[in-house]
Length: 64
Image (cartoon, rainbow, N blue to C red; front, side, top):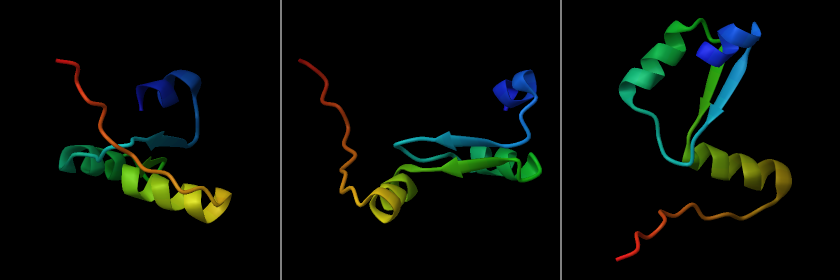
């Protein structure tokens, strides 16, 4: 949201391969609907729906 203000953007989209906290969702909603939050499962759906791509989001394994 800070970047939106800095660039004077009317709308923004924030995509994560993970999920958003309850607080982030509330903050996004409080921002007047100007920012769209897309979590990992919705991102996978959108890639399939619009680009016909099957993707799998997985966690990177830590090296021992």
